[in-house]
Image 1 (cartoon, rainbow, N blue to C red):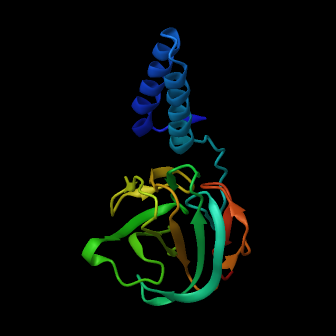
Image 2 (cartoon, one colour; image 1 turned 45 degrees about the vertical axis):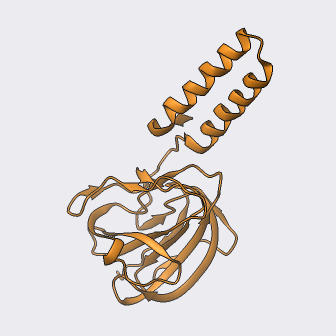
Amino acid sequence: MRLLKLFRIPFFAAVLIALGAMLAGAWLTTALAMLAAGGVFVLGRDPVHDVPSRPLGVVSPVDGRITVVDEREDPFLARPSLVVRMRQGVFAPAVLHSPIEGRVQHIWCGHSMPATDDGAVVAIHVSTDEGDDVVFSLSRPWLPGPLSWSVQPGERVGQGLRKGLAGWGRHVSIYMPPGSMPEVQLQDRVRAGVDVISRLEHSV
C-alpha cells in the first residue's frame, strides 16, 4: 500500500505532531493527531494492483459501485453507445486509471464540455489501436477533492494504469461503442484498473 505524493507531507506532519504530543504527555493532542494521520492515509492511499492484460476489455477507472448499465446517446461523440456508470465511494482511493490502452484523442472541460445528464466536469476520449472509441467522464462530487489527468491528446496510455486523481464521491460514466458486451450488473462493486466492466466486440 502506497501513499500518494500529495498526501505524504500532511501524513508525516500529523505523525510528528502525534509523537511530539505523546512525549509531552498531551494525550488529547496525541489522539487527535493520530486520527488526522489515519484520515489522511485512508483518503490518500494508493493501492498496488496487479494489472493483467485484458484484450478488448474495458476496466473500471475508479473503485465504485455500478449504478447504470444501459444503451444511451454518447454526448461527446454524438453516437449510440453502451454506457456504464458508477458511483465512486466517499472513502475510495482517489486514483484515476485508464480504462483501455490506446491514444488520447480529446479532453473536454470547462466551456468545451457538452451538456450531460450526470453533471460531468471533465471527459477523456481514448481510441484503441483497433479503432474503438471509449470516453469516460467524471462529475463534480459533493466532497471536494483533487482532479487531474496526466496524459495529453496525442499521447498513449496503458490499460489499467494510474494516470490521474479522481477525488472522492464522483459519478463516473464510461461510453463505449454500440455492441460492446457489459460484464457487470447493477450494484456490482468494481476495483479501479482491475475489474472488467465491458468487452469490445469485433467481427471475425
